[in-house]
Length: 167
Image (cartoon, rainbow, N blue to C red):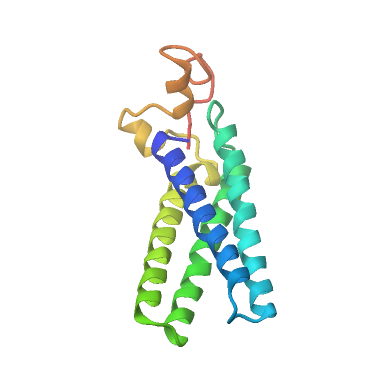
């Protein structure tokens, strides 16, 4: 995975943890939400936080190794789910009886989440599709994260015959 792609996934993971851990605190601290609403919010938050944990696993694995197609597809599920949740949630918030400030804040939360998800999706798409060529950042001369960490001429990407694709 490229440095930019790794950074995108790291940002998506951090944003997901920030948003959905706060949602859990807010839901269970609310006097106005029903228990059913709290449970529903908690289940959605748990799923997204679970994908954030998987994102951390991918970040650790790709620090020095190439991103596999299987892990790239899992990351795409995470990104796609993020987009789907916010594509549904933002209109629900605007249609409900919420103050304008609440609506604007949640729309901005959704826009940031969707932007990070799209960035992440695009970063892992070449690996998910199984294409073996270098990603855009590598073609522009930016080394993959693993080869930069390994130092000049060494590591997984510096050896002759080693896989060169980092997506």
